[in-house]
Image 1 (cartoon, one colour):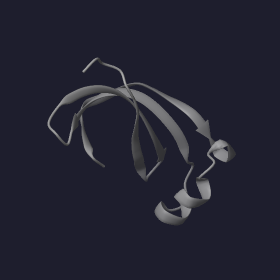
Image 2: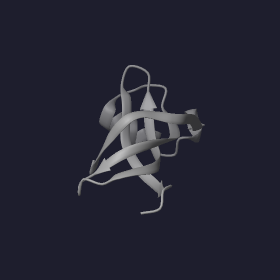
Image 3: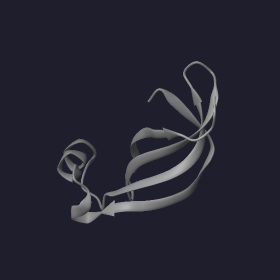
Image 4: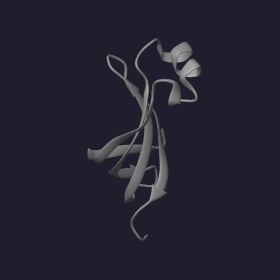
Length: 79
């Protein structure tokens, strides 16, 4: 991960679950079995260069395993 989340992830929502998660087999092989969901939300992150940016994040999570494979999908502020 090339960024750190500052604060909380807001407006979190599930965009896929169960068989709708296309990479479910890979997630289970790497992290273990679980009820995997693909989620998205908005957060402030600190980039590697030190800048704070407001971004849309996508990630996978399962109960008991937590958030995995966080990815910045869009920058929401002007900078």
